[in-house]
Image: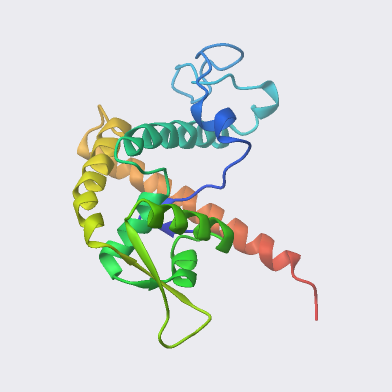
Length: 200
């Protein structure tokens, strides 16, 4: 769990159909006031989640954000996550696939599928590394450059949707709060990994 391009990447839970594309009616179940602002949650908040209102709010926020991102990106032939790979390639140039895995805190299998789909769409090109026969170099194609402006526009649109009605000060405060929450989770993940390591 790391920050990539200013975005906290959360692991998916369940299927996309269950967690991304479904939109239960708001207000059913004990959802009212779950965010502490007197508003009803977008999905029912079970009583068992009462001890984690912030955690459930993060779940709801991530779910909706990914759903909206998917709708916007689908119009230009991308799926959520693919645009982040392209962003790094546009900014850094050709990269080893293993470096993309590290940059996006992904895994090899997921990255292989993502790169293959981007290659099939004509946005990236794969080639063997001239210095390491085991490595594959991924580079953006000339055709992908036309996509860059569209991706930037979509991310600006998504930002406006997410922060609608907030002042500049409120946006800054929200970003700082999210960064603090991210830092807490990164530290917790680090501590958990350290505790899981066997003693030598």
